[in-house]
Image (cartoon, rainbow, N blue to C red; front, side):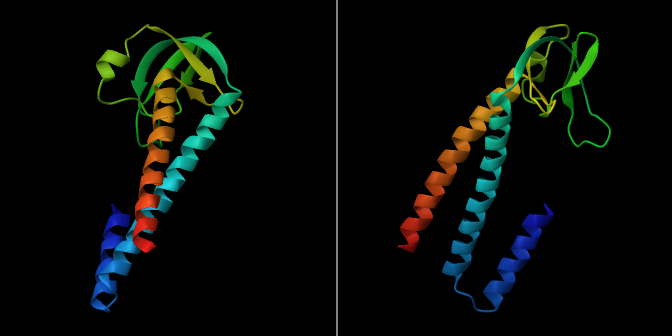
Length: 146
């Protein structure tokens, strides 16, 4: 939220100082492309870490918020050990997707990160939508610039 407020202040100052609104909007579009590119890089790095991951069987236990984290995540039990999902849990269909004592297959990366099937779906969707968004915005901005 602070970034949006800061951006609004900068845009207002640029407008007051007489910068052409066309250049301001062009800068905002380029900034948006950079943010989308950073998000896409995150999904690419996560997908690469999944390439060498191994599958393990586990049982869903609960959803809770770990100390120092902003969002709750799913906790699974495998061979008596608690495993916490690397991504936050899904909020919309939480009661349908996460059922107590359900057997699941998890992916464990070399770095020890745990991903359930909903995280893998999120990664694939992020790769597809991020790529499409950058392609569309880049095409739009280049079309306006040229």
